[in-house]
Length: 431
Image (tube, rainbow, N blue to C red; front, side, top):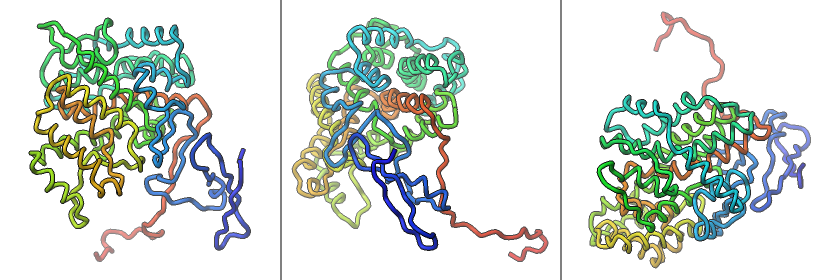
């Protein structure tokens, strides 16, 4: 039911068109333009930057104030006091778990981390040097062929078990994608490790020696997953919802999200940060590249600064900045040339009037890229890790959509092609 009503007058249409205005819990009011279709009118909004495609109760962003809430909880509080699996439970269920619920959820996820043994042989169909994201797209999409016992999207129990399987198995598949690309044997997950430590073990462990977890690194990995867990209706989440609106199985929907995330304009930002640092090459070159970034006649721009949504400081970046310091101190690698370049760029961005005025603050991708490099994760795995962290958000949005009445996604268009014309036989065509 509408909270208020807007009235639109259009040349050629008698009277006014009444458009309901809906009021969310927080955030801007939303004008419902659905009544326009009955008048043969559509709105035009390239990129859907001013269009609410759905109702959701999962994540809220206030870009002007630098606010990010998961189910109402500030991201700063969750990052400081919670962990990734507890946040997964929150996103899926709407509330934080009590001690018993969390213990049961963690146990369930832990028991589902292994993948079907035949899935291991599926990897042999890929080239050894294949990009891990290419492998992820294929393998995750194929999960429906291995776990076809719970694909009824109208069955709440099926939706629940599928959500648990995806959250549990995505890190395993991610690590397997990496191991396959470098020719090392797969490692089975270990139930005595927590979620982040288990991922690091499957990434860097070896059957030839004992794996010694580093709690600082594990905590940093857990925070990276947590901070990327959801981010409202971004390109990949919208892709998951659009695919899900057709009734597609959840594994196919998540594979679609992974494909969308693979784009350099979306999930490749932290990878672009490392490429930028390599291009700069040395701390002494930083002023030259900063000067280029300020030159409005130069197309060059610094990666990892500013954000399409946040017009203030990215709240996730503040947490990542602290985590970055902890990791570099723990590993004692603050003398790494690329990290020195990053530190110098950060200092300039936080103090230089040009960056402050344009609100080009370091974003979460800037710091996460530095952390992942410091840990030893190769650049081509950055987006895979992003996908691993974002999986619970994708599932939460898919689950929210299919748990209530929904419509198949069908955007309209502004047609600019030829009007109706008659077919001309080929022998009569003059040009």
